[in-house]
Length: 133
Image (cartoon, rainbow, N blue to C red; front, side):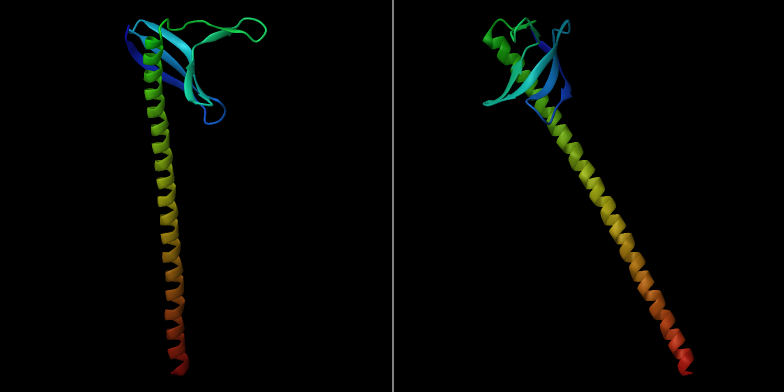
């Protein structure tokens, strides 16, 4: 059974649950609501589960071997990190765009201030010559 698609459906920046994921196998079977959790020892995955009673949870679907669990975990983490990198790149581009706009505004303001200073000074010289003449 091959993992043919991993979709990060929701990413959280706060709290312990970092993402909700769907994984497709052999382009024929999908498991939704796999969670990426931030634990004390780093990230781990939690398979979809249902509350059974007094705080007990039971997996709805889960891998039967640790090898399969590790393949699923690695595929999820790879896609999760790609999504995080893309989000960081977008934030960087947004910051760059904002910085560019701020620099343009500062440059326009400086030009306006220089023009404002030059024009009155030139007018003052002309007025000064007329007065002396």
